[in-house]
Length: 156
Image (cartoon, rainbow, N blue to C red; front, side):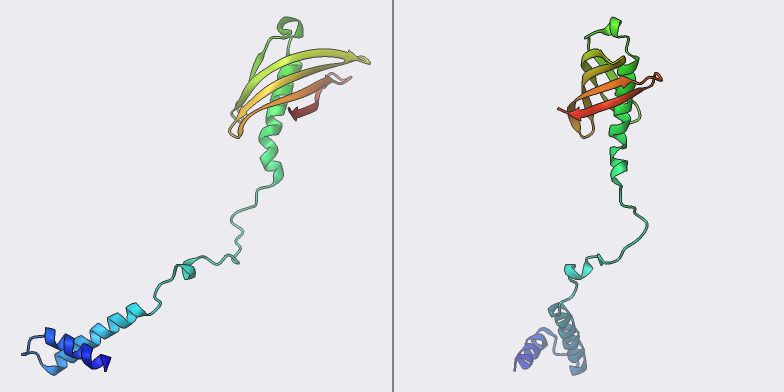
């Protein structure tokens, strides 16, 4: 019944001079187009990539890679504190920068102690990096061979 009504409405739009075959072709085209629109069509749910597919082109970052910048900064700070002429600089703030990571800061509150013939320097430093500004307290000590090692370095 609905098809006959639709046929009459579409037929009323066409000029009377067109043949019945032209009307039928036009109606068929209209119904096919409308039928295609009524079907589900394209769905965004179906467009989501398959997450079960695994490729080897992107490696998972390792924890050690994330710490390289911090370790590099610690090494730079240790080098400055150990090379510091304590009698000249004393308690003055000492700026530092690490060109490898882009981090920078100021070493403050430097103190020097000697225990059991081992020279140690305690310090406090700021670290300005891409991940924010932090303050650390650390200590570096000279070993019997003359090498300095960082014995502590932790955020305050």
